[in-house]
Amino acid sequence: MRFRLPLWPSTINGQITWIIILGLLIVIVGGPVLERAVRTDADISDIERMSARVHAISSILANTAPEERHIIMDAAKRDGLQLELLPLSDLAFFRSSSSTEPTIQVILEWIFPPDDIPVPLQGWRTFLNDQRVIAAKVDGETMVVLSELPKTFFWSDDVLGRGSNYLFALLTLIGLFSAFAVWAITLPLRRIAAAAINADASTGPPIFEERGSVEIVALARALNDMRSRISDMVEGRTRMLRGISHDLRTPLTRMRLRVERVADTGLRDALLNDIEQTDRLLSESLNYLRDDFKREALERADLASVVRTICNEFQDIGHSVDYLGPNRLVANFKPIALNRAVSNLCENATKFGTEVQIGLSSNDGLITIEVADNGPGIPAELHRKVLEPFFKVDSARSGADKGFGLGLSIVSEIVQAHHGTLDIEDRQPHGLIVRVTIPA
Image (cartoon, rainbow, N blue to C red; front, side, top):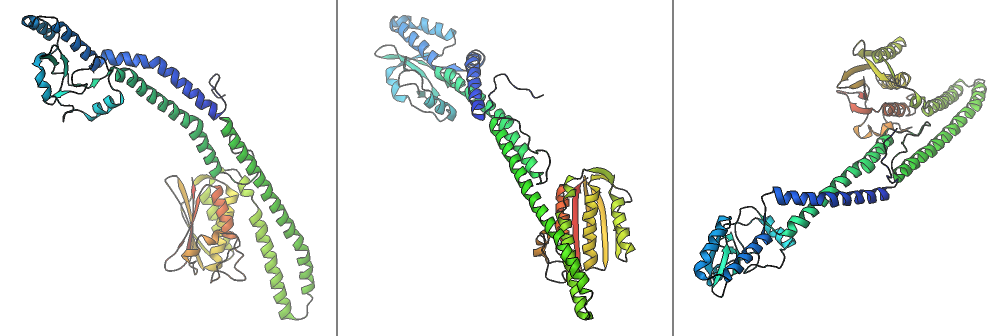
C-alpha cells in the first residue's frame, strides 16, 4: 500500500499549486524566525540603527555648550561608539566609494537601499580615508562622525528583514520544487523509459505501471494501449503469413509429385531443386515468425552443457566444431531460445567455413559466446545490415544453398530478449566472429 498525503491533488497542476502554498506557509512561519536569529545571533551591523544613534547624539550635542560636549563624547565612547567632532569643511574629503568595500555589499545596498530617515551627511555611502563613516551635522561649523565601524557588512533594515525572507523563500521553493520534480515527474518518467527499453510487442500484462499523477497515469495507459495495438497488428501479420506459408505447402506437394514423373532427368532435378528451395524458404519464414523465446521464462541452468551439446550434434554430422570454455557455467537464461540462437550461429558458420570454434566465458557479470569460422567473412560495412530479415550478402557467403538471411535476425531478437548485445567482427587472417554478450 502506497503512502499518500491527505488532500494531495491528483494532477501535476494541482500538485504544483499545493507545493507553492506549502512553500508560502513555510516562509510565513520560518521567515520571522530566521530574521530574529540573524538579528540576535549574527555579528551584523544595522546601518540604519547606527545612523539613528549618531543623529540622536548630534541633537544632544547641538543643545549642549561647546565646552561640555566632551562629556557626551566620552560617554558615547564608553558605550563603544568611536565618535569624533570634525569641522564641516572636512566634508570635502568624503568619498562615495572605497577600494576595500566588498562587491556583495554594493549589490545588496543597491537592491535594498536604506530608508530615507535619518540620512547621514553626504548620503548613506560615505567613506573617509577608505573607511566607511556616518556623519551628522551638529551646528553650522561642526559635525559628529562615527568612524572605526565594525569590519562586517553593513546591512540596511530591509536587508535584514525582506532580504532574509526572500532568501529563505527562494531556498524553500527551490528545495520543494526539486523534491517534487524528482518524486512526481522524473522518477515516473524514468520508470516508464526503463519499461519501454525492455518492452516488446508480444502479448502479456501491461508493462507500464499506471500510478502517479493523472498525467503520468494517462501517459502510461496510452503507452499500454499503443503496445496492445502494436501487439494485435504483429499477431495479425504473423497469423496471415503463417496461413500463407501453410497454404503454399499443399500446391508445392502436388508440384513435387508431378515433377517426379517428368521423364527428362535434368529438367526434373532442376524443378525439384526449385521446389525444395521454396519449401525451405517457407520453413525458415515460419521459424522466424515463431516468437516463443519472448514468452519463455528465464531459468537457472548450465549454459556450458547447452553449448557443448550443440557442438557434439554438429560434430556427429561431420562438421569440425570445437568447444573452448569451462566444463560448467551456471547462469540465468532462456534455454530453448539460447539453444536456438547458438545453433543458428553454428549452422551459418559451418555453411561458410570448414573449421568452427565456439568459445564460452564469463567475466564481471557478463557471459560471452563467440562463434568463429574460417570462411570468407563479411565486409565491415555490412556487419549491421546482415542482422536485418531476408538480407543476404551477394558474395561468397550467399548462394542457392546458403539460406535466406533469417538466421542472424532470429539470433539478434533472442539476444535482445536476454537484454544482451550482438557484435560481428572480422577474423584474421580470414573468417568471421559473431559475439553474443548477455547478463549472467
